[in-house]
Length: 346
Image 1 (cartoon, rainbow, N blue to C red):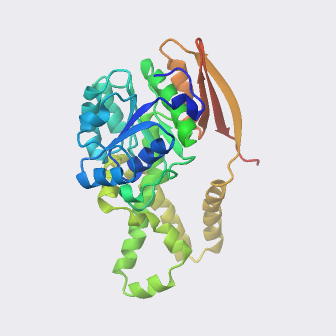
Image 2 (image 1 turned 90 degrees about the vertical axis):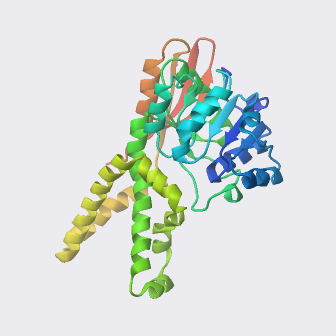
Image 3 (image 1 turned 45 degrees about the vertical axis):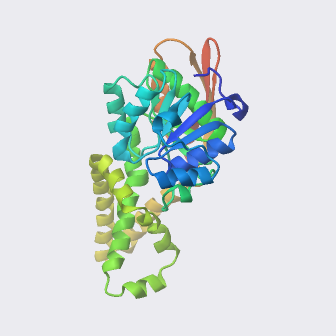
């Protein structure tokens, strides 16, 4: 692991591997390849490996060959396969090789890694980007550009791996690195990503069963198209994501159901003021999405030690809606460039 982060040139000699080359893994693979890194990709599907070779990527037939001599490995297979894959990859790579994943839930895999003593070099991750399509043929090197990319830091040597990986993602993907503990990630992702899949599925499914289905589709405009976009995500992938965060999704779904109940009650009562107030409350959140303001701050910590204070600050930043755009590690100190949301004026 290097102690310096910053420009893409600092990673010119990096040797990377991507295990699982579907939509997200394939996009990671293509971006690393385009950045000029020595990059290999491996997928259990021979046809997918063939497609990777056709796109100019080294894709060996065996996983061991793909992992040989790597400095960093991205685990990008289906969510249920990640624990077994993590063990296999950890056993086939040297202790200095940094491991990370792109799975949509973090609690289960983080706990698994902790029980197997792997958090010294495994940094759980989740780039918040994607598409309703799937597979390497849908992958693009720009898919993850400037994405919010969650990383879960751990104290001790795991913090060193986090710093290095954060710098890599900023330099090569222009990522907004969001440091969070696994539990906070899963809580936030339930509302930010997982419940929307349920709502999109419910709306599209109701139309599928409607008496005037074809007429509805003929009239459907942007609100229906935007609201149901993720219903086109491969069903098995969606099911794995929802089951992987089941309890939190059900908790947050109850909150959404309660709000929907308030809307229905106001509509049933013919209460225009209540309907207006509820939609105004919701609209304020929607309006805040594209125009959030951030205050920039720099924070330093000792480079050595167990890093408990550093990890606490990092996770607090992510829980507050902030992100990192830089991490500079010197001989004695590490310095972060952080962006923390500014509360709207009242």
